[in-house]
Length: 289
Image 1 (cartoon, rainbow, N blue to C red):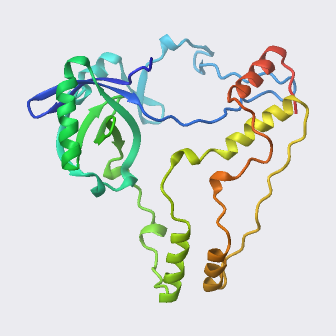
Image 2 (tube, rainbow, N blue to C red):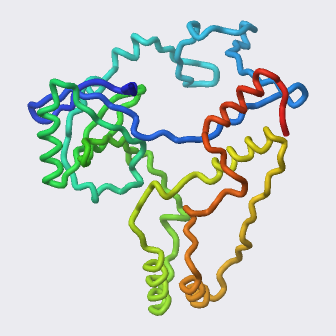
C-alpha cells in the first residue's frame, strides 16, 4: 500500500474534505556507487564534526541558518512547529481558474489527491463541479517545511494536485527574453507547417522510454558476462545553411520516430538486474570491467 506524503483537509467554502496526497510520479535512474579504484570498496560518507574531531549520530544533529560566516541561528523542531501556518493542516481553495491560463513553466511536482471515507461525497461533488465548469482550483499547502502554491485539477479518475513555482522563482534569462525575432519568409513558414503536419500524432506517453537507462542496463548485463559493448553511433550534424533545402529534405525523408529506436546492445528483461549486479559486487568485492 502506498504511503501518503500529506494528510489534512481540503477547504472549499464551508466544506472541509479530509484528504491524503500520494506521489504521482517519480523519476527512474540507475545509481552508480563511488568505489575505491584500488580495492573496489564502496566509499562511505560518515557524518563528521571537524571541531570535535569525531563521527556524530543523527540524533545529535540540529538545524541552523548561517547569517554570517560560521555564525548560525539555531532551530529546534518545537521552534519550527510554532511558525507552522494553517496550510500545514488544511489547504484552502483560494480561487478557481481555467487550466489553459496557467503557463506549464510554473508546474513542479504532481500528486494524487484522494478522499478519506467520510469525505467521499463532498469530494465527488467538487470533482464533478470542476469537470463540468472546466475550472481548476488554486490553493496553498505546507509540507516538507515549505508552503506551496498548488493547482488542483479534475481528471477522469479523480483530482490531481500540482505544486507550482512562485513568480519570484521563475528565472529571467536575457538570451531568452530579449532575443531578436527574425521574420521568416512565407514559403519557409508553409514548408515548416508541412513538416509539423507530417510528424503530427496523438500523444501516447507509453511510446516513449529512457533509451540511455536501457543501454546502461544492457551494459551492466554485458559486463557481468564479460562481453564487449557496442558503441552508439551518432549522426554528424552541421548548422543549416539553406533553410528551404533543409525543410524540403526533412519533408521528403521518412520520419524516424525516436520512440521506436533500439538501444545499441540488447536490453535485459528486468530492471532488477542492475540491483543484482550491485548485490553481486557487494558480496564478492570483485569488479567487472
